[in-house]
Image (tube, rainbow, N blue to C red):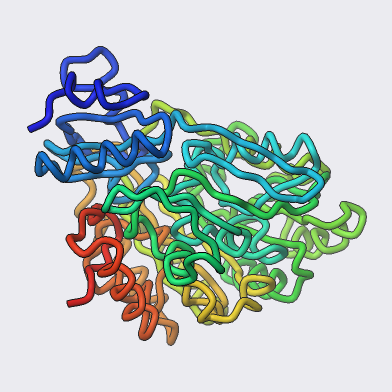
Length: 454
């Protein structure tokens, strides 16, 4: 096996090994309940470092993990006794405001990128958490606050620099390598280590956004989904139907009761958004209303993230054709009986720009899906995981409808069937063929894995 000193001699970046002062921090990922101990962690500085680390892993037989922000629900960014390629210190960003494009290294977080672009009144669609690394969210698709107006993150990806299993550093786009570029847009980390992305930038200045909390009744939940589907594409809403945490701005009698915590963004002119948001406020008397004009990057600060908080998630993702009142009643009743605090059923209305991209254009195959659902039970003790996962599975089964798809970006360690559901039909077959071409030995397998074709 390659030693820390041997690998360090090959890299511009640094190598962290067991016994080093920052080893425990470097191996800690965002989800809790994992205690994996890598043999080596390579904090790479550039694509050449990545290529050399891949070669070292192959030559020494070390299993390879790749980490950007460390948010993988299945903790794919860390591995026992293997080598972690950690790109988190690669934060180069070059913005061409006139051309509306940016080259960004994949160690940047969504919040860092969005803050820099926001200074120029520009944005690229990412997710709803600022600490997520742009590497992982981009490769899986990217669903967030600007999805209905400007599409997924991958719909705004123009080119990528990637290091493949053979150590080649490739810059690919739709013309130079259409197959690999197609696979990168939604196929996850199966094809190599992405080191830079070229993104399209959109004009997004002051938005109408923030948090709106409503009481959760079946009527409110179902009507909210209907209102968002009927709203202009400028409106994207992430509705967390959940048991209310003890937030200081919520009345004490609400704590532990079902609420709808909406994080929303109206990306058009705020004056035009006011009557749209008024329809949501009219569904019920708000328990809290923090919606106001704000710079788009400020939206990420509405849900502050504690870097020392590592909750244990039991979760399931699915796609649905709609949320009618009976489905909403199931959600509310199930939340009232949940033992986790919090328990969450997150609803995201899709459509808009996302739905207008032809299905065959990217590896994200769910363009016709209407609603994305994420069911989760969160705790701080692994002893609760089994009971909470049973609750999550039961609720998910009750909400399942005709749409059998799932979103790869929200998958945990859920088995081959769920990965297949993320890439149905011809998408799966094409991905396997491309995988066989660029990673025939399945070196990049710590992910939502697509095995190479025979």
